[in-house]
Image 1 (spheres, one colour):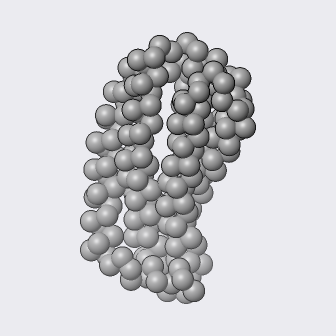
Image 2 (tube, rainbow, N blue to C red):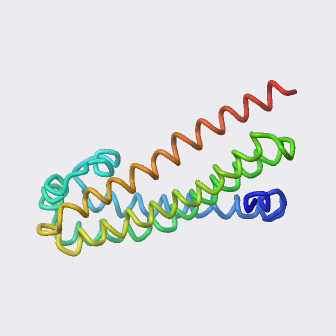
Image 3 (spheres, rainbow, N blue to C red):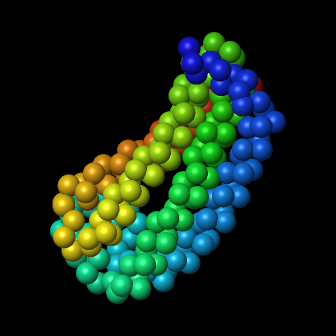
Length: 181
């Protein structure tokens, strides 16, 4: 199985280095992204925007923004690629570190490898989601509504992986480790 390679690759040392890189990327890009997001004055919350599934709503929100605010919003979305890389690395490395604490053939170890890979996949979905944001920004009042729906679909999958699968697996794995001791 391909996932079994995660037993020793990346090495424990490199996994920790990648975790530190992920944390640094997350912190740095989050701060800069928040700055530009603030300047953009996007009129709705993160979750409402991500899960609108509506071209009409996004067009209405864009219509409240000036050209300068739209530029700031675009910069924030570009910076999000650094943030998502950091977040994907953190999920990958934390899950890998925890999964490796279980026995070689255990369900926890194998499922941890899957969750680790899903963390990287979620970052990829986040990147695709942002492509749709850039497409919508290219014609803020006339983009095809399907772009907003696709944007929200990729956002939904990303959020499910980041916050549901990763969180549930991590909490369950930590409890399993504590019970085993």
